[in-house]
Amino acid sequence: MIPIVTQRLTLREVTHDDAAFILKLLNTPKFIKYIGDRGVRSIEDAVRYIDERYLASYRDNGYGLYGVVENASGVLVGACGFVRRDALPAPDIGFSFLPEFERKGYGFESATAVMKYGREVLGFDEVLAITSLDNDASAKLLTKLGFTFDKIIDLNGEPLKLFVNG
Image (tube, rainbow, N blue to C red; front, side, top):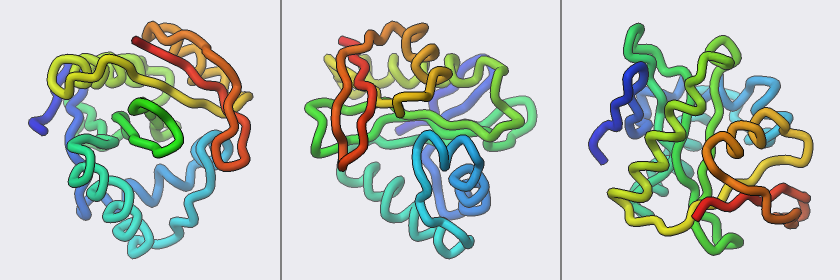
């Protein structure tokens, strides 16, 4: 993957050098509430998580979640990209941002760019999205991106909203 560059952001693959950022992101209150506690409590845990989730997805699928860098500062502000889950028939888009970078339009900007990349470069005909039942902010962003609510699904014992784009 070449970096995806927008007016304010650059999306790039996550590396071990990003472990401190991943540790911080995965332990924000909203990440734990809406996405789940990943049990990442140290830099070593974050490196392992990067290996098992990010790097494995790039290797196995040719895509994954990407680090979102604010161009003006060079700081990692969030993650956005695609996840391939055995339980779903198509890739799903995911995004999360550090609290201090929310409500700046970065979610829409990065997700719009990654959707274009998915369609034009990866050849996706359909992209899905899942959210927890009470994650209204993500549902609103997905609707703005052109997703439509499809149904409630059970994924690993958790009821989730399924959205479809395609």
